[in-house]
Length: 279
Image 1: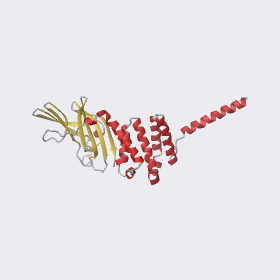
Image 2 (image 1 turned 120 degrees about the horizontal axis):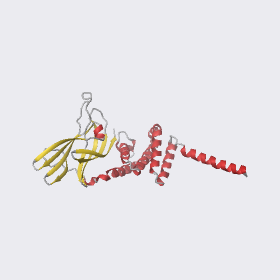
Image 3 (image 1 turned 60 degrees about the vertical axis):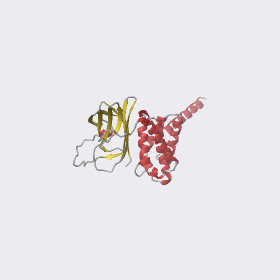
Image 4 (image 1 turned 135 degrees about the vertical axis):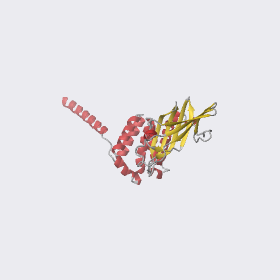
């Protein structure tokens, strides 16, 4: 009886150890491993354990980056690679990592030499587009973007965006980002996005130069954005800058930028931003 009991305990213990070992064994860096980690993530999604799903998916992607790149180069398996990326974006959406989600989706949909652009009518393309749209919507949600406008400044001689117009006071903002320059000639030039704030009260005008103090526009030497919108939301003056941009010094790098700022007491304070490299 004791020997049977010992044998039963040994069997149960061995099974538990094997199960634990199998659970901790990382997925192999091959197609079968990719399918396994996606299956595991799907099970975690059903349990609403999105953080663990994201951690497992990103760990696999990082650990198996070279193998996944080789898989991407095989036309018959290109979609498998992008389904992994779509799963990661879905997990980022659920864990409120909206900036990372937008960065990934933008690079895949608009990046130079992205193979996803060659698959416009596929399910995986639609899935990534949907995830990007959802993350973008959540990223914008706190700032009431439907209330922001791109109304031209009504003051003659000032090319900028109208921020507010109350009584006889008009406030306008014009992005004056760094101009292109030769970094061999000016190696010590400090990157700083410049803006000009115009305040007109009655017949009097005041112009003030503003500098972004933090974020990517402060620590990167970027030139130009395509679009600026602004508005007063719940008593806060919100400015949104977005569009394509690149370095001021010579080079062909290209980015898509989207940032929200609050204009307060003559300062532009960063609220949130995403900078996605596309070239």
